Image (tube, rainbow, N blue to C red):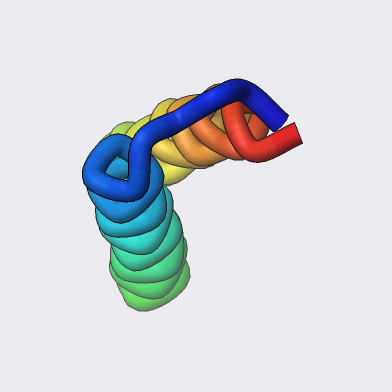
Length: 61
């Protein structure tokens, strides 16, 4: 794990939680959507935030 201050760690944990929430919300919206283009856009957003989440997790290793 990187040498993070408690403030940095807290901020990182908050951001990880926010990214996780965005992934779930975009996935849920994509599932409910009937329009193929909008569904794809929402899925792309979910994937983008999943990548952000994965990147942030590396700071905890």
